Length: 119
Image (cartoon, rainbow, N blue to C red):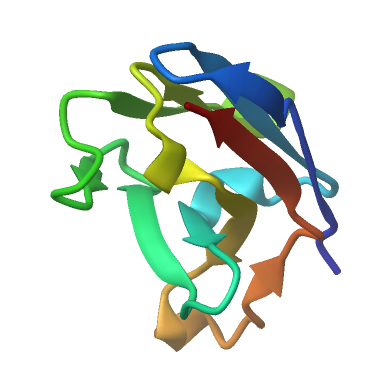
């Protein structure tokens, strides 16, 4: 069983920055691909950023150049540095852990952290 706990959200003015963290329990963090999703009110949850178990990263077009995902396997933590925030970035941000299907492990979600960007 893996538990994911997000932190770092808050209220920030447009153009500001935040650093979101997602701490994972357990000893197998390094085998998971880690992702950040977000869900704005009335909208579907969308994938924001991915960092694979091997360290490769990928981003949604809407956040490229502004958001940076990283992981620290020694601390069982994945981060999302969010810069140049826009009001449309307002959402609940969720951490996700997913391993290779061949390992037969569940997908895990955190409880979310609210990011609110004022104009």
